[in-house]
Length: 395
Image 1: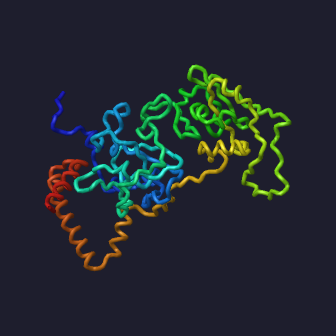
Image 2 (image 1 turned 120 degrees about the horizontal axis):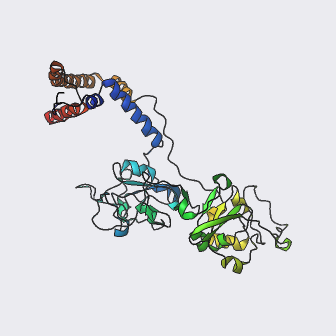
Image 3 (image 1 turned 60 degrees about the vertical axis):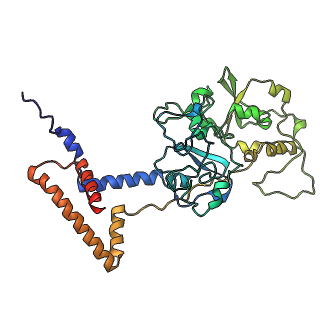
């Protein structure tokens, strides 16, 4: 039995390291398709000028520094001292923070992009003067803006749920459910008993139910109550919504004009009609709202005042989410696009490009000649070494 030469690469590893031109182009095309699926929207325009809107948000843990209790090992920050949380739109997460540690927050309401403002102006590189946003370079006044209308939570440090844990998709095993009101996400295990997914459309957490009276007193057939015992929902019960005949909403005055079908009218009679003292004496509970539940939310004068006072208008009206504009699918690869661009060059540019290609080709042939003579396999690392040397020769 002959001992293997330690200097010779393993046959299997050498085969895996071989890179052919065809294989490279195929791999590149696969990467382009994958990128198109993940980043399907255009990212050339920031949403800042649209004001406070309902939109997908992202946080950058590289350009912000969380307090000690939210800091994670292995995440490097560009900020020396603890900073305030900040969020950015879809476009800024790509154009301004590529290569950073990004946390996807999904959609949140009434939020204006922080990128380039006081909250998100790190010194990324020397001479940057703190200019972070690449999509608002002409907006020099941004550094004095703080978006006081935004609301922040532990989500912006990558933490979720009432258990306040950092979310790691690679290790997370359970399901997470978003609260319709506060937009935080909760582990199903932390919620407790959850109805079948098909039986409800939206979840409202016990914290929001306890905070907002209008949610505690809600009485409709389109919800399921989950009673909380020792921090977990132990059983769920569909609400019966029994109304007293005398509690029907008062009729609209004859002088009132008919409203459009989709617009809800304000009546003077309340459809909740629950004993407030009895409701407040109950154990904490979560709400699982059945599809179409918004149509049954009471819009009497008192309830609407409570809804507006609590900034919960989204309970009674549909919301428009500002999504990135869908990008047109590419009909050609980057390689094909480059060839097409070459054909559109004028003669002088084409000659220069051809000369540069000839120089590169000659250098590559000289570099590969010893491999051909010895029969040595050309690996991916060999090609990287060639281009590093070529870059130095061009300096």
